[in-house]
Image (cartoon, rainbow, N blue to C red):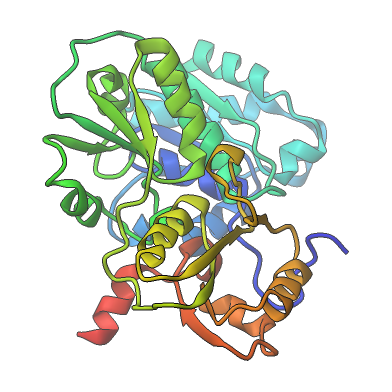
Length: 347
């Protein structure tokens, strides 16, 4: 059965991805659910919950509210929140509940703006797709709605799109900025140690670096609107394990896998990239694989002739028949482990 997980835990869903992008933007985010999806975000998919405060709420829909589609109740609650928290915008994130009852999120967006007087973005996530789909939607809506003014370009300023814990395993931008510091001047990681003000000033960037596929759509928007050039890359490869002269399979988000491939090809390796998450055709090579179910990864690992596999250790549960070397490559959206946890363990 397609997408049936028999060996690993569920991967981070689209609503978690949307919340990850919005987390540090300074707005009021309401997860349109009865409480379960918000618990999943805060308990499992958002590691910054214990380090940085965010106005993230559950709509707390009761059974009859959901069944009857009482949108007015949600808007009323949101209006009360805005009276207690000073925020520049509000956001409503969809879950399976509004998807099943066909909630008109666009109408909710308009109703909220009218009631609160604040800009609102409603994201049509439904909890059935993966985190990068929600990230892509959130990035695009934020830049489309708020990055509207063309400002003077600041020479050397680099904007980074895709910096979320789900993509990078980092909860702040220090490591990313350190890796890029010798290549540019001012660096802003949109949504990580920065808020909506930097989104508004996005046109100041001399160029954009997209470090995950979920940021490509927003980068293209900025390119079309302001002419801002963008590149795809991933700067966090310094701690990659040493491999030389091997046939290697890398399973991660696409841009991380691509960066590691370039690193290992210099050591004489033959590398294939694979991912359960979105893979843009412009950045795929022949032989790269977009995985849709566990059995595809098992088939690839057992019959692909690989000497080494780099992937989150959660995938090792399904690859017990693999006779080569398995190296752990953490991906928070898969295994829920941060990179710094590894540093703490080794210190």
